[in-house]
Amino acid sequence: MDSVVLFEIILRIHTGENPFECLECGEKFSSLSNLQNHLRTHTGENPFECQSFVESQECGCLPNPLRQTIPGGPYREADVEETAGEFQGFSLEKAKNEDAEGHYGDGPQRQEGSHAAGNDQRNEEDEELVHLRMHSGKKTHQCRSGHLQKHLRTHTGEKPFECSKCGKRFSCSGHLQKHLRTHTGEKPFECTECGKRFNCSGHLQKHVRTHTGEKRFECSECGKRCSHSGDLQKHVRTHTGEKPFECSECGKRFNCSSSLQKHLRIHTGVKPFECSECGKGFSQSVHLQQHLRTHTGEKPFECSECGKRFSQSGALQLHARTHTGEKPFECSECGKRFSCSSSLQKHLRIHTGEKPFECPECKKRFRQCGSFQKHLRSHTKRNHVTA
Picture 1 (cartoon, rainbow, N blue to C red):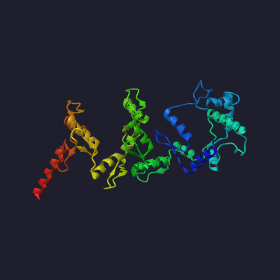
Picture 2: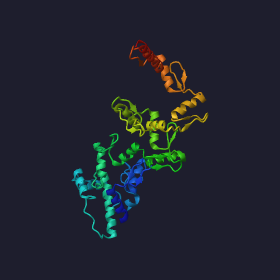
Picture 3: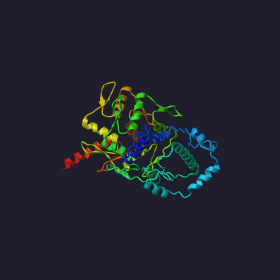
Picture 4: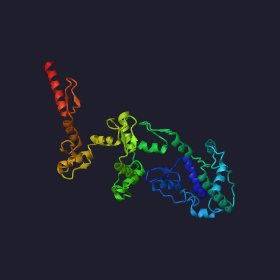
């Protein structure tokens, strides 16, 4: 590796700079090689095959040219066992101490001025040892940049970085920085096609596919194609009915973690999204965006039939049914159809006999909110006449 490149990588360890970003999930890395390794978690690519253990497993190790240059040819089981014995004294605590002292590995530091040939031979020996440790399960090289501490949090569950706005905690500072943009509204990533802005580059990349029409991920059940692997995974759950995310408060289950997080705010009452105009709080950012239009008067959704405009897309969809006559909501009891779900819910009370609205004065109950409000006014008038 070029000394200048190595120096730049080491500098990023101290500055925390991560200029290489994954276009799939937005995670950032300090070096291109780390990003390339990470990308294989999305693609499933395993480009390197261990010839010694190919019959039993693919272990993803040394490239073919390197295997050919190592003296002795392919590795034997005895080599693995012998090498495993070299590191019996290794411990995690020892690795932490070495990490704090600035050691890169378990051997002595290399002397400056070594001949190129000697370095090449040492590199081959190092590659061989790294490969053998993979089979023995020993990990003697620890990262000095804090990656060890970051990894340990996956075991301990520690989340030391807390959002000052809503109290949500994160295991790494990068995730906190992304989350903070949901409060500040900062959207530094802009689409060059339509000007729409996003708070993380991963969302921008997903959006760009709406312009290109690229949908690389196909559902094996129904053939539906998705532009992102995460969207495909969520879609597949509509076929399987899987809902792996459960609310610890009420037991309700969800097919994606984001839906669970939104639901949890019903129990906690947390409303982290605040209107800068009137101070009203909301549990979801989309609700805040809709509310802001009541201040600005913006109505971005226009009916193509009559030109009437609406502040919310749902209101436009409901209005469009007055033109099409579409009534997609059907009563399972009598077959009557409705243009919106709320009308169906009101209708169902006729069959169930449910009367959820109770008068606090006389305890009379009503099926519809309108009838309830009308009844309340009768008490108000009566009290006024009596007075």
